[in-house]
Image (cartoon, rainbow, N blue to C red):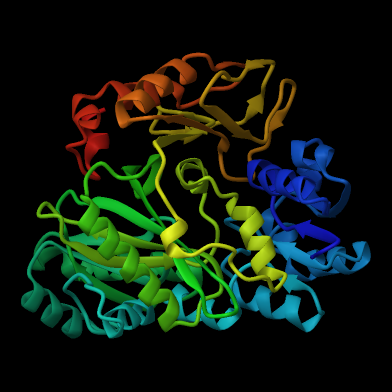
Length: 444
């Protein structure tokens, strides 16, 4: 087992990993930018190292500085968390070059599944359904037109290197196709430095359901069932729950088996998530694979009873997964709300500021993963998620009621958050009934 792990992340994500390191008796090393000197993860880690100026490119995205910090602190391994360098194959290769274990999949798996075109082809090869669309890259308007005519409108144009909802455009008809193709290409180049595109038939108001998997270096791959991430806005997840109320047991098993097939097909090792779209007839289609731990992983931990960060660390240290598929059972229900510092009445604009006073929820069945505290100044340079509120219950209805209670206990002074928006979601009749899709936000 590792003696010391450097966490190449910040805020809530870093705090979460540090806590598991403490539980395992592993020394934790925090890295931070000049803007994050007073951040919570810096204060609770065993050691901390400043790696640069406020902008991410000068700190959390600077591979050389993070590697240097790991070498200077004599860390055995690096955990990248989620975001930043967590799905960067070049960073994984650099870690290996300097004899540092990267806690995640190897660079080859990242390259295979990080490329959305190649991932679709691998899913199809594994016998997993994919949405109708282009067989590979769409490199010209003529190819796009042929695909759209064959598949039908509306049609989605997506970046091969996409993520976080960026590089996605929809053409409602032929008159919009060229403009949307150019817009998607420009956004893909600006965000990812990669202008390759592919196309998928638009699925109206689907459910977004994902399967958590674990895989070790001995060929063992298991799934930990599903999470429903349908509550989104602009392709950004807001509220997640596990399991999904939308699918039955038979579909759940088929989706889990499909996720395992994909992981085996690409030789995947460590934790990962296979995402699916599910249509009105409960048919599921492969969407993408995230080659890292997810923001919403706590809801899976809550219903399965497994610390996913701990399992990531053990797998990276060369250990076998200590359980089999038959051992994995779902217990109760879990729900997570992402608490963001943003102004929902002003087009959800991110908001920074100092938290002059705060109170976080507690009680039975309540977990708060947070990177903030009273007196903390939220910087303007990074993602605006400041906490995750997770609740559990015996049933979905219990979870909704408990989440309403818990989220109403939050008190923040000095900053603006999306808490009131979450309360509107929790009171929405379609959300309560479980009969909704990705356009739920239009009703809020």
